Length: 316
Length: 288
Figure 1 (cartoon, rainbow over the protein chains, first blue to last red):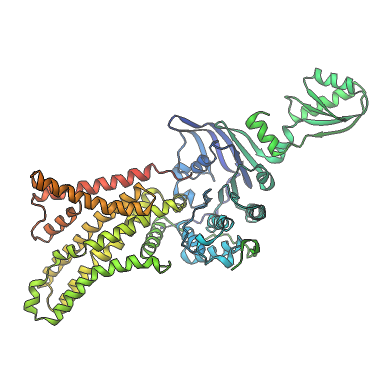
Figure 2 (cartoon, chains in turn yellow, brown):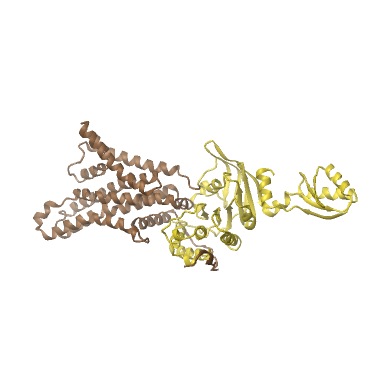
């Protein structure tokens, strides 16, 4: 039986879409209301331990059904599409275990064949994938003789060899030293940008998600507490920084009357509040104009992903 | 060989694949083939080939001996020794050893090494996976439960000691195939059930052997000491498939009970073993 080629049809704008998804294991509620849209590109999936990252990956693969709500992956319901959808997904699990006595090339080729590639194509592509991840010279070696870093690369080759439209990576840098981690992150970024394969990267390391991801989804307490483009989230949530030369007291009083929260930091003011970013800037401008104060600089606060994560997860 | 720090990424580019993709049938065939290779130690170090080669050869030694005798002795003397049904007793050790070695190798290893998770992230479902694995284990077992008897039939036919006439040959061939299927099905499900219950290969292998020995001892002790009905011997699991095979070949049955009881007990045990496998795999977590 043959099926139409995967990769021919252009994936929809939202690679993953969840609306009101709930999931429980017995009495343990994992997701009470999971709502998010994951656009194309590289997306980081963040959450503290036990937040349901791995369960979500299982649901995206169609291995667990949601109790309620709508979930689509590449435009299809994973619980219904099942195997047809998984054929277009590459998955790299968190654990480091792989069959120790099988050559890397044999393992990657076998997994490519079960994802629907003809044997000859699978042979070529598994070899290419191993070259791509830097294991070309090592491809005939049994996986059990490889280091943790090399096994992580084998897992990445397993995920890309069959040319998926989407790759799910579960902690792909776990167990790597800093040099290996840099190489792996660079490779993942390249796969997501140059090769046009969308990536969902589950990690608890904020710095690496910030480094290679375009988008982020933050899970906490059974819900998505933040999602979207990282640069927009960092800019939009942190308020503004203003540097004012004279008329500072009057400007602060005007801002506080407008409901803004002011914190003086050396020669600058950190201004926050419940207003959206454009309204916040308008309120600051009007307060300064009212008091004939001199504004030298006004800029949005650039939060780090860590600030954002701590805000969303721990409310700090 | 390069070390990790010397590893270098060569840019061989990346090609999209726009060709056709095969379906689940091809994926199952690949798992089946890969499992047979693994069971027989193919594409693995020599030490992995020793057990399967020795156990399989053991099953052919009696056939070679019988055929050698057939060639040497006059046919009227040899004719009385031709006993296909009795051959199943000669291969019982090979069948047990091969099941104890291959069953856990095919299932427990996949779970311990994470291969099961990779399979479940592919188009395969648990049902596809278990079907492919059961087929692989049964195929390997056919090498000792079916092929030696076919070899014996072919050899006897070649030296003029085969069944008389085409229809008798077909009847005997059918019985040999059915006998191989009964024994392989039983041992396949026993091996898979034991391997479902533990990730440790050694424990699963010991479990297979101990289950057969313990059930035999228990059934025979109850029969001899408690002097209960012959039906208690149906609890001797190792004898269940052999008893069915003896009835198939119309020789004397091993357990003195009506056929419906013997076949019913065999069917019940097969169903129970299959349920253990299905139940175990249904509750097995994949993404963890």
